[in-house]
Image 1 (spheres, helix red, strand yellow):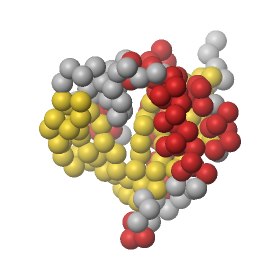
Image 2 (spheres, helix red, strand yellow):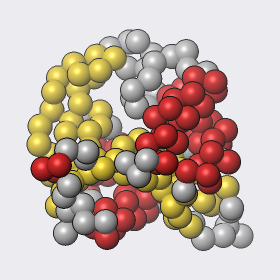
Image 3 (tube, rainbow, N blue to C red):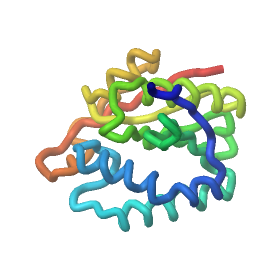
Image 4 (cartoon, one colour):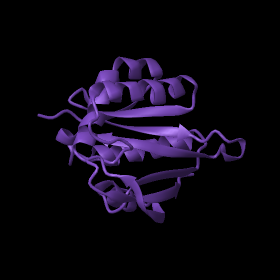
Length: 177
């Protein structure tokens, strides 16, 4: 019998302890075709280096928060909340890197992570959230279903992980407070 999914926030020490797992999930997502800023080849070492530099440091500085989803005790997904650093934008944040292990898809992990990250943002006084994703991707449809507003699509915005094509990026916003 499957244990319930648990969404929790990791501090920077917890994230560092889980670095290999977090990096493996991101690597699996990229290898599975997710357009999350990386192209193939993308090694475990590349992924770990990205997490160290782009997540752990900003978490220690209070600029970023990390939520993870555990299923049967194992981390199977994550999402980041990135605070806007501009003095006139202390009311907003970006949602970044919603990642779900490809072997754990269709369990409601992405929806649960998004619901929780919106609540975390609201509790932190961040009332306006933004994010972007590949046009017409599974994430695109999830965000629409969760009430996110499409701002627009920039065509040919990013190279697909397999180098095969330029993909459009859809930019979304949502007021949560």
